[in-house]
Each structure stands twice: as C-alpha cells, then as structure tokens.
Length: 468
Image (cartoon, rainbow, N blue to C red; front, side):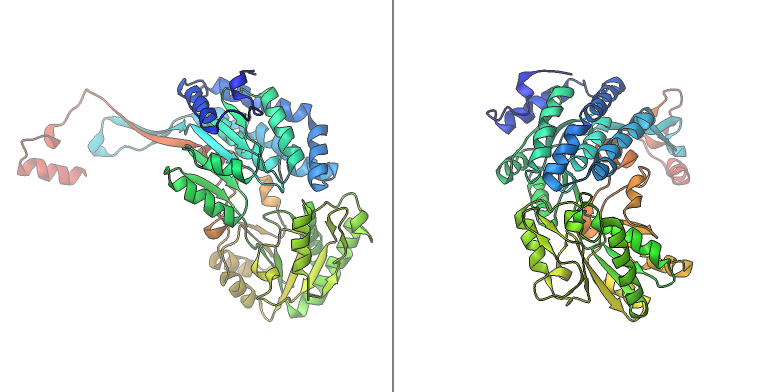
C-alpha cells in the first residue's frame, strides 16, 4: 500500500490531466506488469472488502435500501468470489498462448503474448454501485493496468466509501478514484485513455463512445435494454413464477438484466398471473412496502419516472407508492399499449408488463422486432422450442428456466450485443478485455531457404506457390 499524496482520491485541486499523466508515468515504469504486483493488489482489494463488509452494506442500504442478504449475494460476496477466481487462474491467463506456424515460416515458433493496455477509465453505475465499479477493476488489475475509478454520483454513500477505501488499501501510484457528476465525467472523457469501460444507459453510452472516438480509444459499453422473458405453458409454472419474482424484483427491479417484460400465450396467462401473485406474497409478504427485504428506488426523480409509467394503466398487482421511503410496490401490468413508455423504454424498476400472444412463434417474432437485449429468459420443457429460440434470436446472454443465474458463472463472458452494449468481461474474458494480445513469431537462424529472396526465378516462384 502506498501513501503518495499526489494520487489521493480526494485531491480535487489537481487537474485530471495531471492525475492521469502521473498514472501513465507510473505505468511506464513497468511496476504493474509482474505477477507479484498484480496478486498483491488483488489481495489488498480482498482485504478491503473483507475488512469493511459492514460499512459497504451500510452504504448500499443508505443508497438503495439493500438488505444485508441482498448486499452480500449481489455485491460483497460476488466480488469476493470474483477475486478468488481471478487469483486462482491469473498465472495461467498471463502465459503466452502458442499457435501453429505455417511451413513457409519454419523453423519458428508463434505465440500470442498478453500485455496490459496501460491506463484505463472505469465508469460505474448506481444500481449495483459497488459491484459494477469493482468487478471491472478486478479485471483491470489482473491484466496489469493503472486505473481511474469513477463511481456513480447517484449512489453517494457507496461512492464516498469506495474513494476512501481505495486510497487506504491500494497502490495509489497506480490507482485513483474521482467522485462527482456530469462535469467530472465529461472532463475525464476528454482525456486520452488506453481503454474506457462504461456501465450504464444507452444515451450516456453514445456520449462515451463519441468522446473515445476523439482519441481512438477502445471502449467496453455495458448498457441494457428491454430483456424479454418467454414462458412456455409446459414449464413448471410455480417454479417459473418463483424465479421470475426473484430476478425481477431483486434490488426493486433496478437490474440491467432483470426481465423487462414477460411473453406468455393467452391460454396460460391467468395461471402465470396467479402464480406470480402467490410468489410475491411468499417472498415479500402482504405489505412489501414495509418489508426490509424489499429495496428502495435510488432517488425521488427515478421514483416519479416509474410512477409516470403507470399513469392511465391498470395494475393487476401492486402499484402502491411510499414516497418517503422511495418505494414502489412490485407491480404487474397486463397487455399495456405497445406504444406506451412502459413498453418503449427500459423500465429499470419494479414494474413487470405481461404481454399475451396467441402462439409461442408470435413471442419469438415479438422479440425479434425489437432491439437486441442484454439478456433473454426462456422457461420451457420443450427442447425443440428451446433450440428454435436459441437459433432464431439474439441477446447478450440467455438463461433457460431461470433468471440472472448465468452471472454466477465466471466462465461465461458477460456483455451486450447491438444497442445493449459491446465488449465482455467476467473471469478470463475480463482479463482479455483489459489486455492486448501481442502476436509474436520467433525464427531460428539455422535454416534460411533462399527462395523468398531476389533474384527471383520461375523455379523459386513454383516452390513458393507450393509453400504458401
């Protein structure tokens, strides 16, 4: 751990350009490249999380009303598992990847050598304000980069805690935290980075990409969209409802991969609605607004946005609001107008539209007529229909017969497609995102066939054609 004052996260008087220049100078010394440094920083980050679990949970409770169990499973425990996985595999990820060498280049060996990109910017989101900053940071450290972290200003308690703890535990000659809002983010984006990693909405994602283009900076954009959930009537409806309720109303629906709407045939709609009603009662009780396991909306502005979605619409379940607690009850709306804001915008809250269709084929067509989502969910026992959905639709990730659970597998890369994002991370794919795989060929001096050198002849050309 370093205490170099020039890199203090709270040192707001220094221009960001000076901050980034100092980090780049630190990277140029080569200090972040060795395995020992990377492991030491990951272990320091592990201690940061383990030593301050109560403070992290308290910040998440203050920002989003997260219960202790939810904070552990989706943020604190998730990060600890990510660090453990990374430490276990890091030395293997860092090794050169040998590839074949064509006959014409023999004798030689060819390999791809991972190297860190340099100094990277990580911009987090407010809905999982600890996890969505620290998880890409783990990947950046593993790949040997210097990094600036920009937590979301909409989760101020978690942002302040990250800034304080990073400075206390990490090598501050290689890592810094910048707090603030739009102005600070704009200033950071104006600088030249070796990579920008952004998690958030599509609108700001476009701004990030435009800013990065000025410096030809590569970007990873983890965005969102309207993630569909198709329910086949032959699925276990009770288990389906239980898993939809968990995935949708976790974090009060403020999850980028939460089911954004459900598609079900009319024949099974009533059964699914009643199963969802029963499961909501089982998980959150008769009065979910007073249930400590049920989270809050991040701020009054977002609460009013969600309430606005429900104007002129009838809710078959929920709809109650507690403005003082920033809570909206779990809400189900059946067949809202397809041109309504509820069906045109990513909901990012505890409202679930249920759309009835005549056939499952119509459900697939419904999905394909819309932008490619970050995630898609399918509940079915029909393997033929399962294969049809996988073959005929596109999404960043697909989960069959559950919601969200693919996030627990570090071997599954996470990322969007189309408007839901670009680039991937988690596990080795995160290491790859923050690395450049340098192509290397090493040739021997002992054999030097002259056919590629001038003067040329028909015989040399004939031999070359056979070799290439």
